[in-house]
Figure 1 (tube, rainbow, N blue to C red):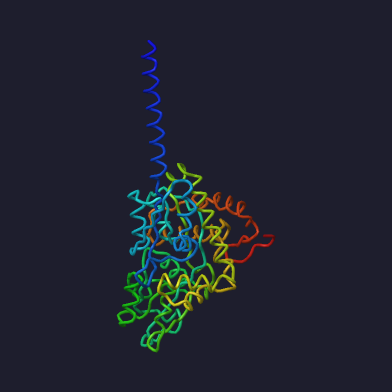
Figure 2 (cartoon, rainbow, N blue to C red; figure 1 turned 180 degrees about the vertical axis):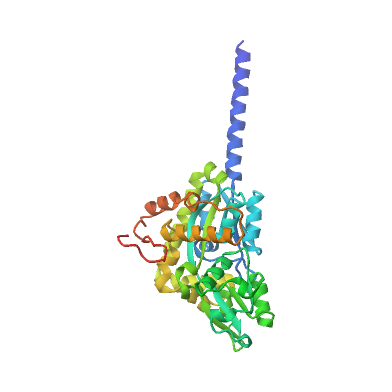
Length: 356
């Protein structure tokens, strides 16, 4: 009888060891998968902002190592649509997306939460000298390249509307960022609406006509760091660790004294000239641009973008941005990092709210 009891004890102990080993292997095997659009002009993958800083400085890898978690970065040349496809195929846990791509994903049924906001990125209008385009209203009847399905499209449409125009007033051609620049340089399109890399094309043949912030901060592009509901619910502590890193990075980038160092670091990774990147990081807007808060500006901008996407039939059905944007992780990070007073609340127009 004693032998049977011992045998049973040994079996139970063996099962316990197997369970413990399985748990340890599971923890070690956990990989956080992050997808971002590749905005590089060279052969190194690149994204800017707090997410880009985390990638270039290997901060998430270092932060999560103690929890037995590894990080896998995936860069997509296909921008938002490709990132959404990977999310739909359950190949990603987190993604950094422009507002339109994130909205399309959510409206299409992707169970995501917007965890951290990004705002105020400029789009630029570059045009050939031969086109005669000197201002936004000169786009009537012209061939204009825009990357559809990205935040650039919403920024473009809002800017046109501010001048009483719409895409119907011109021939809009859907080209990705690199193809659009090549088409402009070859004169196959009259103008391109896109990111800061367009500034590198400025020459005797190509003008930089305008930037989106010239027409109000509401016309700039917004973006966000989204996570899947499944991962957030299963791993809230890991999610919080990631947001802590990104919020700290946002504070670092908001520091004017760090501006040139960060621009040089981005230039080495992106193969874009540092002086172009510095033009995008306007010192008077740095604090606004870097705010990760769920404030009235972010909520208003995403709400407007959802309505705009539905009106333009880019999505079939809208949804409530207020229930999608989950600000608890940023709020926790601000407290943990003692940054509660670092960013004020910005109203829908981008002005500091009184009393904040």
